Structure formats: C-alpha cells, structure tokens
Length: 578
DNA sequence: GCCGTTTTCGGCCCGACTGTTTTCAGTCG
Image: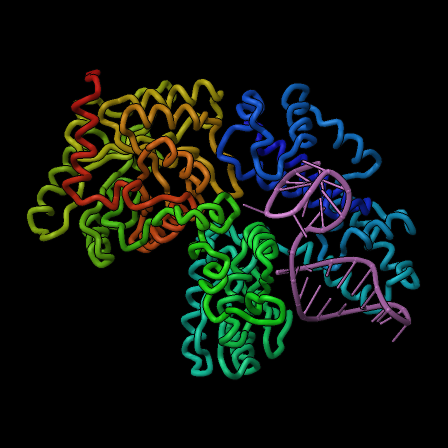
C-alpha cells in the first residue's frame, strides 16, 4: 500500500506552501487529503485503478491526478516544484513552539536562517532584535520554544498515559471543590499514542483546583497556572493540562477538547449550514444559547445521535450518526475472558493459578493459558512433553474451579517455512490454538504473507496473534499483505488478535474496521506475562471501539460454550493434514 | 484545492492569548 507515502507527500506540500504564505484554504485542502489518505481502509492503488479516487471526501480532480502520477511514476511533480530551494530542515523549524510559518519565512528572508543552528546563532549574536514584529518577549519565547522542542518527547503510548491520567483524576476527585472531572483529548478517544494529557473539570474554585493540580508530586515543571487553566510537565516527560470550566459549559467544552480536530471541523461546518454556531461554550443560534451543559446537547440539536469519543475521527461517524446507523460498540463489560496469556511455564512471571485468580477477580468466565512453543528457546518455549504435562496440571486445577475455566492452549510459532512448531496431533489436544510469527521478520512480503496464510489454513489454528508484528514507535512490523490475510481468515473462520499490550496494539483500529467489513472475527487479548498486565484489556477494547467493533465481532464476548464451538467448527470443516 | 437543498463562484470552523501594534497578525488548541 502506498497510502502512507502519498499522505506524507501531501503533508509535506502543505508544510512548504504554508511557509511560502500560500492560500490557507489550499493548504488545508492538502492537509485534509493527507489525513484522509492516511486513515483510508482501502488501498489507494486499487482505488486509482477503479477510478474511485474522487469518491473520497476531500479528494478532487487535482489531488487525484497527483496520486495517479505518483503511483505510475513514483514522483509527484507538484512537490518537487514547490519544495525547490527549501530544505526539510527549514520546514521543520515551524515545529518549534512559538515559531509559525510567518516568522520562519521572515527569519529566512531577513537573516538567511535555514535551520536550528542558524537560529540559535542569530539569537546569541543578538541579530533578532529590531526585526519587524520581534520584541524582547518574543525572543524569550523562541528560546523557550527551542528548549522545549529539543527536550520534547515524541507522543507517548496510551498504555503509559492511561494509568497516569487515572491516577491524577482519582487524586483530584479527593479535592472537595472538584465537582466533575474526566479526561478529554486523544486519550478519551483511546488513540494509540497521545501527545499530551487533557483533563477537564468543573468546580466552584478554579484557582484552588488548579493549584492542587500544579503542586502534585509528579510535576517537574509548571508551564502555566491560572484560575481556569493549569499546564505542567510530569516526570514521565509528558505535558498535562487541566481546565476548569463552568458547569453550564461542561458538555460543550468536553466535546470541543475531545476532538478530533477533523471531527470538530466537520461538525462545525454542518452546524453553520444549519444556522448554528458551535464553540467550547455551547451551541448557539445567533446570540441565543441552545445547549452546552451536556455533550449530547450539541449532537442532538444538530439532529444526530451522540457519537462515542472513540469514533470521532471523521471517518464517516457523523454521517452514520445522522442516519442513526452508528454501531453499538463493544463495552469492557462484554468481555468474558482473556485469550492469550503466559505463565511461568514459559516466559511469564506468575503461575497460571495466580493468573486465573486475577482473571476471576476481573469477573471473567474463562482464561486461556498459551505458553510459547518449543522453537522459541529464548522464551523457554515448551516441548510437546512439557506441554502435555501442563495440560494435565490445567485439567487438575479446572476440577477445583467453579464457574471459571482455564482453556488449554499454545502460542505456537509459525516457523520461517510456514509450518507450525507442533504437530497437528499435539494441537488437537488443545482447546484453543494461537499461531504467531516470532522470527524471520525481514522476509519478503510474498513469502511472509504465504507463511501466515499457511498457518491460517491449518484446521487447528483459531487465532493469529499480533498479526502485523509492529511495536509502536520502535518497529514497523513485518511486511505482510493484510488484505490477503483477511481474505484467508474470512474463508477459514480464523480470528485475528488485537494484542492489548501497550506497545503493540496490533491489529490497529483501521485494520479492525477492515476485518469487520469482511466478517473476520477478532480476539481481544492481553498477552500478559504477569497479573499486573491484565488490565490492558481496557486498551484493547478501546482499539476495538475505534475500529467500530460490536460485541458480536469479538470472540471473547462469547460464552464458554460458544467460544469452544467457534474453535471446534474449523476442525470439522478443515482438511486434516497430519 | 474542494465543494454545492441558497452557490459551478466564492466561500471554506472558532476563539483565546500574546506580543506587538495603536487596531491587528501570528500562533495555538
């Protein structure tokens, strides 16, 4: 798929045009094209072939032609034309807080500044002083901005941000002045990474609430502290903002600060067409305020259903809300068990008894014990002999459990030639078989795809674990053709996993939506190696919700009986190969 | 550059803050 490459190019065109001071609307147009292509579930090359590019909202003839040019020639002349003489380094200067396109362009024109070193030198030599629009304060802010830019971390995983926010909110709730409080922003939307933490509250003493926020023990730097807004940097390196608003504006503020930007822009366009105006203070008709206490006010007045935060990415949710066809999203409470866990028989840190106990505390009805298979020596993978022993132990434990069942399983390696690490005779003894790739990541697309499909076609394999192998902001994953994998899963009743482990979150939301469209079932599994990791089910459910999944799309919402029959069905229909 | 239940031309989301200016541009969320 060239979607990402094309999106990147349009983003770059927008950046350069911005620097050149081009028409804002044209720039936004490129940005919108970049975002919409990045989020596309279809392959852009297929759309180009079928002459369907202009069906995508935000893609007109001009953009479509540029996409086709890139697909056929590998080049986009528009980009080469606008980027002539402007380095990516210079464009990157706009990333420095306080420096926008106008200032960067001016510094370039007046002082020939093209990169970070230039600008630092110019400040040191006092060359900025006296330039148009630049005063003492501005220079001070640029210096701070550069400092921030240098130390600023990348977006952090939701798995890191989520517990931090939970902890902060729990603590602030202890403050009697706080009435309502909750997270907003990309965290509330359960995006896989978050840039900063946004929290919204109501209460009758803003200054006091903000004070309790900026003086928390984990605060390393106070960036702002007023009566309605506090902004701090936490020891984890991430920035956190707390806003205190009037009760009557809480819903509107929540809607506004939850985003996404695209969702809000689309919503406001719609409001405007209907003669309304939306802001963080409410929804208005002329001067008259029509609502804002509750988030649902805004959606209701616009004639649509309330939209769950996880769907607010401008991927068709607004249209669906108008047509009242939004999915009834899966809830955490629908989850009846965890389908991928490791015990200390392989590389886990707890006994499966301990894991089971924790699973019962979470209210589950079942839990899968899926230790690694023999080839994965590094993870103390089980030989057939040891696995048989483990099965015996699990059977014994199950006899003493009431209303809870441990399911016997293996996370069996898909070897580099596509064969499985255990014989079918062994796999037949298990309740659930999870197959996964742990080696040969660099294989060519064709080969690794065939390898995975071979595993999918095995009649005993029920779930493919971490299907793309990516590690968020660490590893891109193997070059597997997901389209073909989805087709193979659809044909064979094989499920794909959402691995909930915070740096995996694999499948991602977009592929989940694709899977659902093809009728491929999903397993939401934590891949826990310790009881402390089993909470991450909440992250996986968040990703599933972002992927528009409903409870019937997810096999661990099934009762134990239904889950077992899902796993057995494939054995009956599949060809035996042993 | 996109788009159309007012439009094929002329619009395109909204508001706050800051610093600079003396009425507003730039930046940010």
